[in-house]
Length: 273
Image (cartoon, helix red, strand yellow):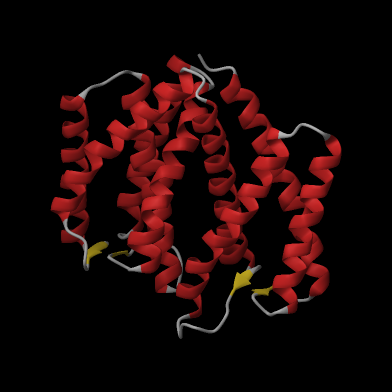
């Protein structure tokens, strides 16, 4: 429990910060949060999933790699993105960006001393250097969304799809042992899964984005059919591993759910000015 408490404490603090931001800024809070998480996930895919440049030890799950990814999930879905969302919506400049970055550096050092976080190829100096620029890029991206830049809006919708697909499949795996991806190149099956699943969710998110941008019902049905066909091909070649082929049908409600969330997100982001 001693490993979990710091993560739970930070999650509680950031949840209150998110509620406060939503109270002050309304639905645009979640519109920006999806973008913020999506950008963090791009970073996380290379730094953690592929190169394992640091480890988390929150001790929520028995498997060390699954546990480390959960620690990263809390960091990249709650802590840093919520801070970025607040800084952007409240129009805070470089002093705040550097100050908040320094705060996370202190947290990182404390986590290291507590033994619940370990740098391997990463460095605390990288955190302090990169984070203010992440906040800056997020603020510029949000400016473009508010100005109605279509390409930025479309990519934002894609990021929302990618985030939601990735999160749903993560919890399907760790809670229900469903939909593990594997091609047999790496000895560690979970490491390989977390390299492959973002590629699958990238494709699924791209298809979902296309169906959202084309409001024709036939296009949406075709998108669901294509997604199911991809699932069947992956199952046929033993890349996705549900218990049996019938389990693939339970992916259809997941696709529909993420599609509905994507539709709602697009309706929100189009109203932003």
